Length: 320
Image (cartoon, rainbow, N blue to C red; front, top):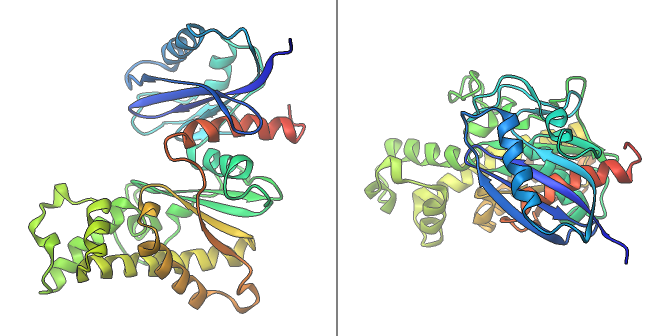
């Protein structure tokens, strides 16, 4: 009886590392996770990953390759470079992983992995040119050109979260000011609400919530209840994001822009103003050429699907 061909997808997070076996059609055959100990070296983390993996019965599977999603991962060098929330120096995670499993292995950052997951298993299955925007604590992006990730000269291309959206604007964790992610992200909309509350005497339930307890989900809940400050915050977020996406379409002429992540779960509260402002600022020759779509990756499985899609894409393109 022939074995089931699968890819091993590994997603390294600051708190948890998830991994699993996924076939070419995106069917999960095995999933598991371990706690990420941020202070331990990568070698110990991968030792624990493979110990946990090998505790399962793998006799029916043939692992064709390993895809690794990680913060600050460089596809060209196979390394994770000064990652946030991990006390690592530059570490070649491809070499570390291949000590345990001698198969084709590649790595990239989580936004690129999400884009490849969308390409193989999600909303962009029939597409060759699109942009994946991940709207979480920050804003990540993966750009697909002609069916493959755009990495640029350094391996770090596609940082749309750190294009300047507002000149001289909000401080960003990257050290610059006015970056898109400081406005269009879960933390960005919280900052917007804080500013609106300070600049207005409008009645709002949000005034009763301490800043540290304010969240994008709570803002969305109150917006659905008709809270004017919450609705204004989503409109402003859509304005900044829509302008930036219109600029991205002018640069990449993509078929679609797919929004993924916690803030995107606000649905029409975010999509309607973003689409409206994106259309308003779109260069004429690109009008009606690019769709704005919600992700079709299940949020709980997106990390594993994205990491496994990374290696399936390499195999399908004949790179490994």
